[in-house]
Image 1: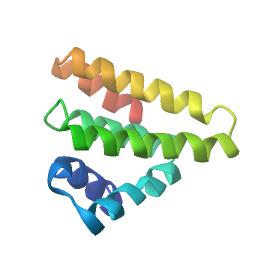
Image 2: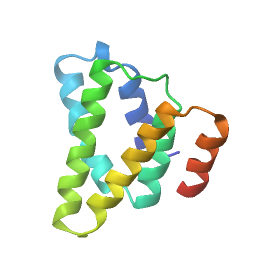
Image 3: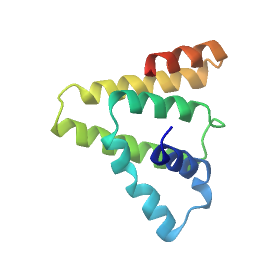
Length: 112
């Protein structure tokens, strides 16, 4: 996991305590998610699924903001990228509902 991904995950974990400039910087980090390759996005979402779920309301807002930024950026370039992002999010949601470790491992295996 690279430094940017670790920073994003840390932002999600402490989202409820972010305010002012910290919150603004965290929100702008959506540009990092928009730059992720398909593999990096899968790795990131797998790591998100390892966080204590459900995320806090602030974490939910940050993650939603980042994913919208990624879809908007992908929309301008690769026509099928938004579909991949939507599929990855649906996989993440499924993992929050079906928690066995084997399901999470299978999702991580697809990411690599």
